[in-house]
Length: 530
Image (cartoon, rainbow, N blue to C red; front, side, top):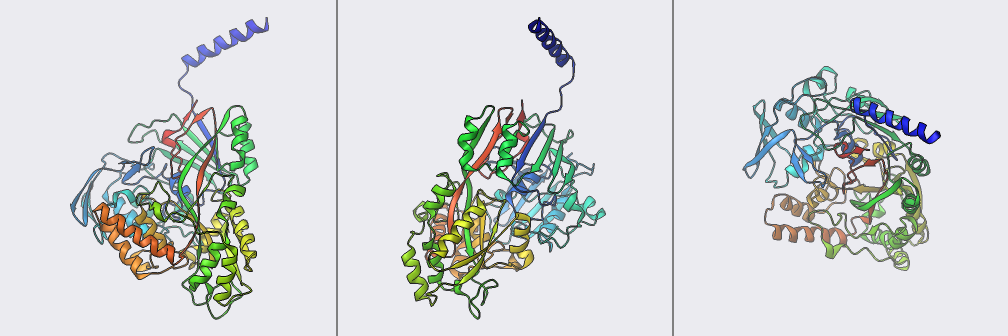
């Protein structure tokens, strides 16, 4: 009798489902850190940009495999080596109902160069934008730039009128000194999703933009994002069915997910390099017991540090074999990657001790290491391991691990690069090594918006010269030769301590399908809830 009742109930439910309109599809997911701002120009962080890329859009968009697709620009062409014409999409409206025009593009570009912006490197790729009419612009670059378009997906466009009405013409500073900026807590883009509610550190809810200018592949009508710092809590919420997706998943939990019912680990190589940088610009370190000089200005000291760190041990013990130790700041997926220079520095603690003694620090010294604890895969654990390894050669490291909102607010240009020694991860937005060189490696040059993420101000005039040439060279063979020369100089000088390419590490329920991109970005357009 129970079976018959169950069959009858199922039959009635099916009939109701057929008769009723399609139900809303809600996708629920968690990341280890919060969405630090709703301002698309506040922080050059891939998680924030990828998330806000569902709300705001660039002139071009990323496809599911990071291919460039038309976005708010329908087409573009190179007029001269330094000028581009973009035909803007007509009939597009912002979520607030305002029309999208050329004025919004010009305003947004200028806003990326405002005092609080962390997008100055991206905005600095452009010298000027001229409005031809409401839907045509001409973009001028300081020098020939054949990869300009590849750097535009995350130059996100805001509405000029809305920004002016709400006193948000300048970007929200990551340093936290103007968090009252209206755009910090409110959004008005042209993208496929709108922000319905946002409560920092608690939850952000996105609703589908039913008036979006194009069809999307997914079926999601609502997205709920919850920041969950603790990895065990994230994984438990996935397994219990509370969430459709979580990331990152600790690599040691991959097997657990694959054995659990209804969930799986979704993994792969990420185009992100994790590395450690040194303050090489100041005459005295901000955070060290050495006064009157800067040990990191000495190549022998930097070499001592890199030879003291066992990357294979970090790979096996912390990353459970899932990371790829590296000798470069660019991953294999990045255009211009130089495989011959990718061999890591050799682990040799005795050499480290000898180099420190030769440099005048036989007993080592003290220094503070700034590290995020909720941004990259096992970031704090990596820093703890580096701290322990350096202690074995006599260097005492004071580890300052903080949530990414505080970490970035401290170490970036908006706070005057308040760091002596730091861990950072980088995926070039253009997926080209020129972005790595011009953002991380060239000398800090605020006037020309170069080297803005070179937090320790490593500086070599020849590398700067090569980077400028690489940015405008169209002959791929010549370009590759210059890239190799630049990276070899950096490696020989031990400009940085590369650690590894981290793995993509997502946990996904069987009730949802997502597209996993090499930049670790989640695009709601390609999410399907079953």
